Image (cartoon, rainbow, N blue to C red; front, side):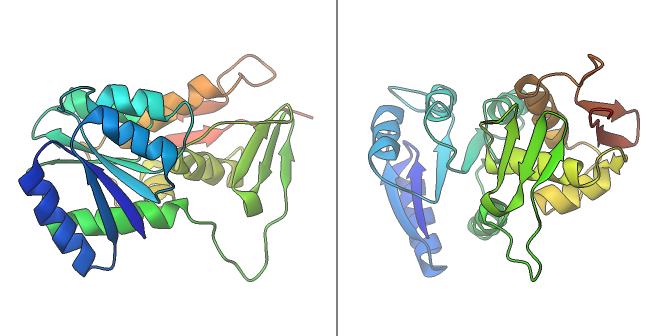
Length: 229
């Protein structure tokens, strides 16, 4: 599994690179945002680890430009306690984040979790395409279309929206959605789902009645609103 780590801390890159290599990953490193983004343009990586504070081009700008041409999974590294950085990273399309300094074993676990979410699920009985008014879900290709046009989604956004679509018209609790779509338990101070849902709402047109396609059920969770026949 090929990973690109983009961080100006060369000592950290060396430490993480050696540990991740021992865990079976192939790790390449770039030490500024400009060269890191160019590397992502030219080569195919399965995941990128991006630090926010870097010379030349910071991690936020890199992620913003990256999402214009690639949906490669991204884990952001943020300064401990910088909640706004984490929220902004998720809004720009990051799949997960970790505070620095980070534990190598936890980083490896986060990488595996993100990669699992981005892989097509192999099931005994392949799910068929589903149509909900203007929305079509194609599970086998991990694609969701609106009015016949594929919606540009990150792996995490796809998993969240696909989970809600599977339960169309039903409330999915925060706990269920976190377990099923993110592969982790929902924490009381975790705003990841809220940020991803907000991002999805911007990408989806309203339902036929003009209401948001994803409806919030206060203190419980969310539901996907299918068009009425």
